[in-house]
Structure formats: structure tokens, C-alpha cells
Amino acid sequence: MTAPPGIAAGRDGVGDPSADRPGAGDRPAEVVAVGEVMGLLDPAGEGPLEDAGRLTLRIAGAEANVLIGLSRLGHRTRLISAVGTDPFGRLIVRTLRREGVAVDQVYRDASAPTGVFFKERYADGHRRVYYYRTGSAAARLSPDHAGLDRLAAPAVLVVSGLSLALGRPDGLSSVVRQAIRHFAARGTRVVFDPNVRSTLWDGEVAAKDFAELLPYLHVVLAGREELAILVPGATPDQAAQALCDGGLRAVVTKDGARGATLHDRDGVTAVPPFPVDRAVDPVGAGDAFAAGVVCGLLRGWPLRDAARLGAVLGAAAVTSTGDWEAMPVEPDPLRLLRRYERLIGDGRGDEVDG
Image (cartoon, rainbow, N blue to C red):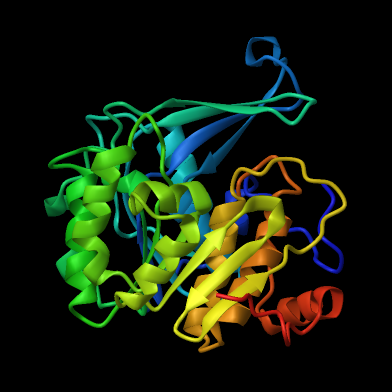
């Protein structure tokens, strides 16, 4: 893989369990996330999946990807989820623990499987993902097994719209809703990534869920098309501004290789992308971006700098076929931000006319 300029590639996530780093279970987490982690079967080459001669077994899941990125930046993280008592579940727990993510709130469900998915890549850049998650342990996770009352309130809670779609009405979806309300009432900042999927969470259902939870949210990280779904009748820029005017601290609109736009109380700011020599796979870039934004929030940075760090991490993520393996290990994220500034500029004067 080719990492962005000046950034060391991350560790391989599948290795010797004797190399595990200590988990974060002995201290309260700064960041808690709720969501499903799955086994990922990733082909070594390009072309139809049925012709793949070799598959690499990995783990991936939006919220877990974010937590791994934050752990690699020196933050204490914890996942609320469930896995089956199967090889995929054991790999998930082992890998997260090695990456420093506390797994004491990952419920082991002997009566349900761990979800799995497959990637398919083509030389022309086309990507396809096949999910097998119906009835998974994570989708069936109930509030009784989530253990929210056992946890100290984190500084940040990370959740996604995709997790709101799973296990409706009494499974994972209900855990996510309870976590948002439970921790927001205790001063936790809720960072929400819609992660809209047309087959699971889209249209009127997504807009209704979002409107119900909006009063509890702090920052929203969304693609332009996602904003159009969540706030019907408005352009993405109009939607972002209306959400900020309505009380959100910020909306960051992600636009892939074109970068991102930050809307907050101080105005509208463009966030140019961080360059890479070659993009291998864009899956996971949004989660890496979210890790950078959350890291900046935890460290009290201006939101513009938090989004720039997100751009650096997102660029790193696309240099690997895995969702999170290329995210950098850097206990001083300010160094990553300085690299962005050296390559892109310090950002003075990059505000967008609103």
C-alpha cells in the first residue's frame, strides 16, 4: 500500500495475539461507540468475487473503525456490541483488544452468528460489497445486555444511522437510541454519521429517525446526498446551515476526493483533501475522517483543524484494501495536522461565502 506523504502506514490488524496491547477496560473511556463489527472476507485481487482465488480474513464495522483510529491516536475507547461465539467473533474481540479498544461491553451471544461481508473490486474503480448480517448477534443486542448503566459517561459517543436500522425495534436500534439519550443527558457530545444505506436506512424512515434524535446530537458528519435525505426539500448546503442554526455545533459535509465543507457557528469553511499517490479502496475513509474529527474535539482544537485531521486520516485509509489497517499510529496527532498545513496551507482565508 502507498501511504500519504509523510505518514507511516498503520499496523496490520491480523497478527499474533501475543502482541496485544492492553485494552482500555481499566479506565473510563473517552469515546464510546455502539454498532456492529463484522468479519470481512477481502479478495487479494480484482475481478468477480467468484473468481477470487484467495481471500484475507479481516474485521470491519463503521463504529469499530472509528474507535481503532482514535486508539491509534492515543485515546481510550470502548465498543458496545455483540458477537457470536464463532471464529469471526473471536477474531473481532482479539483484534479490537490488540488495537486498544475496550471490549468488556461486547456481549458474546451463543445463539446467534457474527455477521460477515465480502468485498469485490474491479480495475475500473467499481466496488461492490455483499453483506450477510440478518439475525446477527449484533443486530439482536438488547438493552439488557448492552450495560449502559454500568458505564461512566464518555466525553464523546459515536453512532451511525446504519446502527439505527439494525435490529428494529428491540435490538441494536433500541440500544443506539437509549445510548444517545442516556449519555447526552450526562453531558456527552454525540457525533453522528448517517451512513445511509438504501436497503436498510433511507428515505422517510431515515429523515424521521434523524429528526427525533437531532436535539441530542452535537456534530453531524454526512455526505452531500445523505444530507438531502435527512433534510428533505433543502440543498446540502441549506440543510447544513439550517441544522447549525437549529442548535448543532457543526455539520461537516463530506465530498470524497473533493474534500469536505465545515458548517459551524463561525461560518462555512472549505477543507481541501489530503493528497495520496494512489487510492486503493475508498471504503473506510469516512470512518477514518470521523476519527480525526473526534480526536480534534477531544483535544479542544478548532473544528476546522479537527476536520483537517480527518482529511489526513481519510487519505491514509484509502491506501489499503482494509477499512482501518492503514490509519496511522501517532500519539501526537498535532504532527499529522502540521503535515496537512505544510502540504495544503494553514487555511487562512479559505472561508467559503455563505
